[in-house]
Image (cartoon, rainbow, N blue to C red; front, top):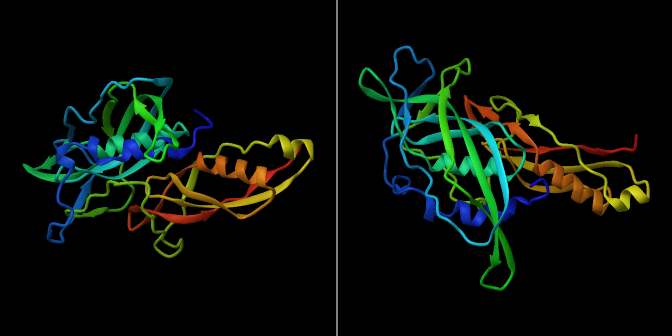
Length: 280
């Protein structure tokens, strides 16, 4: 699983076909702009609960490999029972992190309530995934590989502590991603936008060519750290050597971050990462 490219599962998993009917709301519908306060203290709340079932699961043939992991995420369950601000907080460092985000964003909940009225509530969710790789060909005959669930995911909601300041949601806004193919806009760090903080930084590996030729130095990839804390669109902005550039990209693709925050909400920002290659 360590060397799997991010693209291998994006198409099939992100497709709207497996999103529950409740998720297919009319995004263009006019919704009054209201603010929902997010509650974290359970003392006076009826907590939200997960609606069963969530992600549809279907057996697939020619499914190879057994990739499994336990991931923890934070989220806000809004007053309509939809997940917002889904952030990976305890990653495994491979494509299962992305899959976990997609599963949670497809979930629907019975919203929490206060004095009998539905409210937005901050929560953590632990998810256990098992997946495998299905290979095939697209319309042009090009080989494809996609990550599929081997079994229905196991999920458990837990209490989440407050961030230290009041958080508000805009009513009617659904943050679920339709596809990774869309461009992710990036905020600029500074002022009200905090910088993302790495929580997982796997080391880049030397290529055989660089090791044989004793090539050292620093490559600088750039990436968009999305609102989930996952790197997207990783590319080299300052090259070192082609084979080491490739290793630097591969390493940064597996970085995980606490995302940048703006007014208490996660936002996407662009970052540059110095990846050093040095013989000891």
